[in-house]
View 1 (spheres, helix red, strand yellow):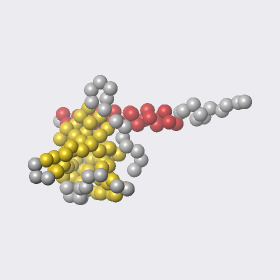
View 2 (tube, rainbow, N blue to C red; view 1 turned 30 degrees about the vertical axis):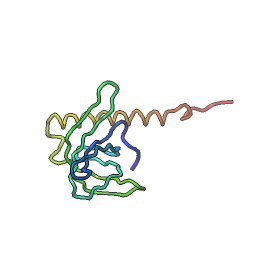
View 3 (cartoon, rainbow, N blue to C red; view 1 turned 180 degrees about the vertical axis):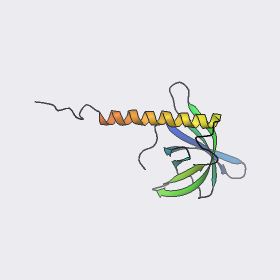
View 4 (cartoon, rainbow, N blue to C red; view 1 turned 90 degrees about the vertical axis):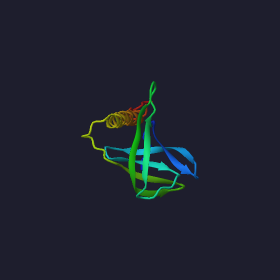
Length: 133
């Protein structure tokens, strides 16, 4: 896994006892048409179903895709956390719905932010400029 996607989190609720639920926020490390990879210290098993809200932090108004249902397909332990591969249910780029439009918008903005961030790190003041003494 590289680094977390910029300004994007997944929010979900897990049961804590009989009547309590806990809201958890987790970093996302990949996002595509079919699913995502998230990192959290909460424990899921492959085959579990998760309902996610993806929230992209923006300057004026956040972009939110709420109620994405996914299936946990893989779990990889990393220190005290786990990386989970989540496959979204019944979601393809061909379908047009408000949720798929928001998810597509989130992916587009995240890709632009990653591109800008990589340009900033590769074109810093010392990269490629020869200084003469």
